[in-house]
Image 1 (cartoon, helix red, strand yellow):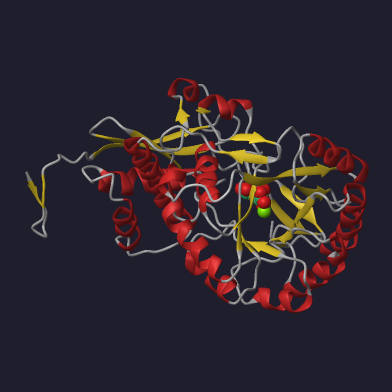
Image 2 (image 1 turned 30 degrees about the vertical axis):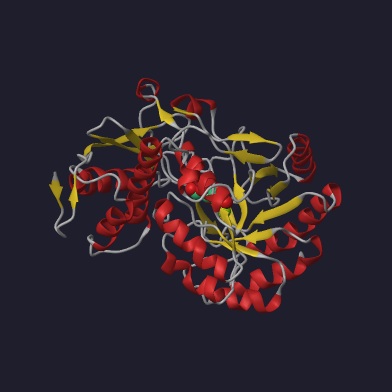
Length: 415
Ligand code: GCO
Ligand code: MG
């Protein structure tokens, strides 16, 4: 018989957290994964990958959070979240919030396994049958972009993001080299050339060609990738209004939430932002003042399922829909967690899905299934993703950085 500090009695012995392992591997690209194991032998996985800054999160988990987790009740997800967030004194920021996210997601995975239910059932069950995703068409020029758009359309995608290389600019965001877009490709940051004027002249023209080619039956998206000032973004948004984009993403850097007001005043092109933001406070004004249409915060970088659900609920009050980040640097554990939440929330919009390399999928098995442009969750208890240590051992950590953009005069620009 156990007596709690409030005098309540319980007769069941409570499992405790026995192990918290930080797993760093590079199957196709770098991933940091947290595996929490309970005294009952149940383990859960959480993604802790912060592209280009992986080891900062690995150390935060290993050196600062793992010692606090041992002996805790794995069932107390909300309490653990509050303990790690408020207990740190130092709040927010991508490193802290990614570390807390990994713990949170691993505990949801464990809760599902203990309950014998997929995590989406614990979150309230399905609000929809599947989760609409967008894929990534790109090209080094317009003909190759259109060919790529066709290839994705043939695969049945309902929504396609289009990016083309601006002639003469090595720093155009989003143009694929191999099968998947992977920007963190060099041992030290690659320095790429950027010219805003050339982009503003070219991007609306190629997007118009894509829309003409595609018709209006498929959603069309575009990622500006933080490259414009608010007034430039307003001009861009106006110039593509007739193309009825599903969204223009990250039209301007989002630290200054107020900056979006100016864009909003000038254009009806829908706005998505938030992939680099990590807490509800970072998107509070964007949401409550209806300065955006889609919030792109993710489970891995914004405090896990517990915190992201809070962001999505706030967004629902203001008719802002979800559109979570889902590039290759979010592991299959994050994809599974994202789909669990996407499936249940009332204000789901769309989910990014770049996919993963065969090497990644050899280590992380059991990802959500993609069919006709929609992702469907695993019906296994928990998140349904496993981590193969033996295969992972073949892929040691391989330091890689994202590129840095420089304007033609040599000054640093937002990449
Ligand atoms: C996207 C993103 C990514 C990021 C990458 C950084 O919309 O998918 O902008 O491509 O650049 O995730 O690590
Ligand atoms: Mg983006």
